[in-house]
Length: 419
Ligand SMILES: [Zn+2]
Image (spheres, protein in one colour):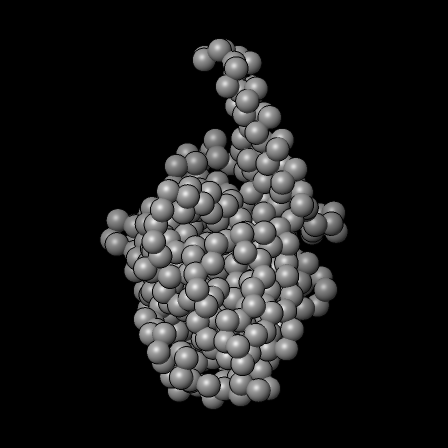
């Protein structure tokens, strides 16, 4: 993990400005109070005071000054202590000057190390509520600390520290990847020369069986009983474990693929749940419905939506592209060699031979789909005006450009004539 900082302008309303002024005043008071004590102790003993030593003074001080309890979020005061002890460390390690007292007339600030979030265009701060903010870009990381400051001209800013994944800028691959999201395998990836299959993690299945067992146990407990509550907690824990390890798998795989590529092409997710036979006009029969239902469940279990979301923000952050191709694109029954459309196939058909007698190529169903998805993505890139080298399997693109081609309707005719 690494940290990135973002500074944005915020617009607190008059009431929030008043609350912020109070909180900033409390932090300033505590900083000056603690600094004064540090100075005295240093003079008398030649030693400093530890951060925990300083925090230990707070309860007494709060009894003396009620407003330190009411006007400021207690974590903000603790953050001030942290900042002060850091200032001393920097001074002792000769990186900074001796800490100074804060003036009422200088820049004011208050930090929120916990219970903050971004909600749409607003920042949520404890004790303050939702504050209007203007974001120039978005980071997909965990928020660590938000520091609100007010400069001498009366403008308010928020410095947001995010924790993001360590390999933030590492991937310089130049591939275009087509990904078919499967049920048997989680993802089938074609990069122009080879196909890689990524299986669903095995431990998820094990967890799922475990979950089923615990849920059965839960269902046998008397409503309202203690043992039922216990069983409920156990089920919740298994749920959390499954969700964590699934997220972990999805993060690692999406990171790997983003590192390898410049462009990733996926099928619009709705495509898979609505038309597993690969076409909008599929005849829906009873068996199809059942299969469809099963498939829909498998899809939600596999976390495809989350996966595409992870791909999307990771690519976006590095100026790379995600292309979602149309759900009516028949990726699973076109021959990638000669582009002849094949008859609709049942999901159980894993291999097929192209019906064009001049071609007759044997295809693995998933591999063919990932090849077709990739080719369709490249066709869309071309239509979008990006420079694409199909044979080399790479795409030249200005780094840092953040465009996304999404959900364009594509006609089959243009696909078949584009090679
Ligand atoms: Zn063929």
